[in-house]
Length: 270
Ligand SMILES: NC(=O)C1=CN([C@@H]2O[C@H](COP(=O)(O)OP(=O)(O)OC[C@H]3O[C@@H](n4cnc5c(N)ncnc54)[C@H](OP(=O)(O)O)[C@@H]3O)[C@@H](O)[C@H]2O)C=CC1
Ligand SMILES: O=C(O)[C@@H]1CCC=N1
Image (cartoon, rainbow, N blue to C red; front, side, top):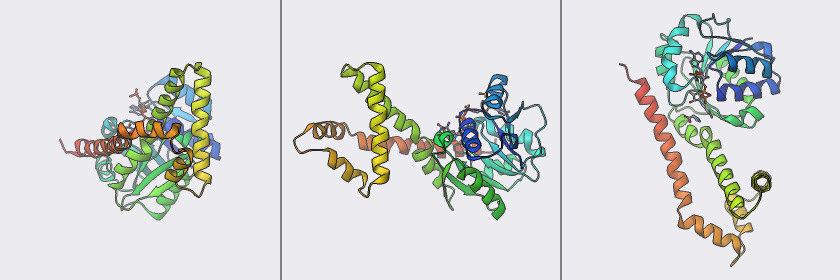
């Protein structure tokens, strides 16, 4: 079995890291990447094979396109002659499975996936959509790969991948933004950078551990922190007055709209 990644950037590195930790042999993974420094780092870190885009692709059971959406069309067209017999998986935001199939010259065994970077520590969550041409074996292989980096939600309606992109694909960035903000708040309270980092990180780690293990929902857990007339109440009021909740909903909606827009822009025939 050989799984080849086309593009060795941030998301490919996160997926490969998770896969290797889960027991995929490094020798079963290949990466095509133009940047020699990135190739060397991936090979050294994960014991995988690498090649540049002008080298032939090894015969691959599955090929995972992990280039930017705007790069996908030309990259796919160049590789199409080497893909007969391979399952094609794309993690590109926005690009629809049938658009990619068309760029590949009519290939229809395509699975469109939206993973996220916690894949690196096997705590990812991926949305996955199998095009009608994908076989049960194709889905099982995709499931095995995605299962090695976290959980998977399969959707029957491809449009749901745009929503998944907005929530869990982009979502780690929203969480990191909140962590950065809590750290900045700790700095504003006069704490040294290392203490600020510790207070913010452990608060997040503790809160998510509690939420995952508790029978209470998030709103109840929040209420249990919020003593009447106390400190948290003031802070939550400030968040509500600044419409932080509706801003988060609007932010995710903007991300979903961008995913749909990318799909339309890139899927248009020139
Ligand atoms: N980052 C994330 O959290 C997530 C990203 N995605 C999707 O994953 C894809 C990759 O994103 P990300 O890893 O962040 O982007 P990166 O830019 O980090 O990675 C893409 C890599 O592909 C390389 N590349 C360019 N042309 C070729 C080629 N002809 N053959 C092989 N590789 C090539 C790029 O090189 P160069 O920079 O020199 O062009 C770059 O190193 C995107 O489509 C994105 O939508 C999906 C889920 C989450
Ligand atoms: O920002 C992006 O477009 C990609 C897709 C989801 C996360 N990163």
